[in-house]
Image 1 (tube, rainbow, N blue to C red):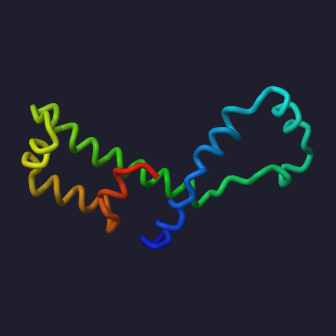
Image 2 (cartoon, helix red, strand yellow; image 1 turned 90 degrees about the vertical axis):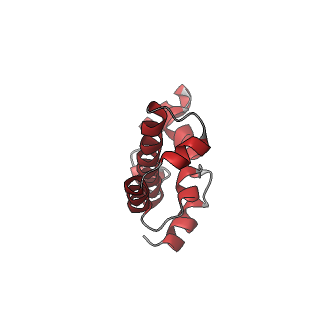
Length: 110
């Protein structure tokens, strides 16, 4: 998936809310009705590519936050202190994690 494709996928802001509503917030009556469907193709399909992209971005986000957390555990209490405590190895690791996607895009929510 190229960076341009990632931008197109991430512009769909409603997908996670819709997935949450479809999976977790289904009222009992609606759940009964859905169980009665004999043809599962009639149900709304989950966009696999979007879900896969968001999962990968979340993994990257967590990996970067883990690096920041290590510096916080070592005593950094502000973003300025974290930035100044990052080693070249940390920066190389963050660059590898981002894999061409801007860090800001990885860290910010959809």
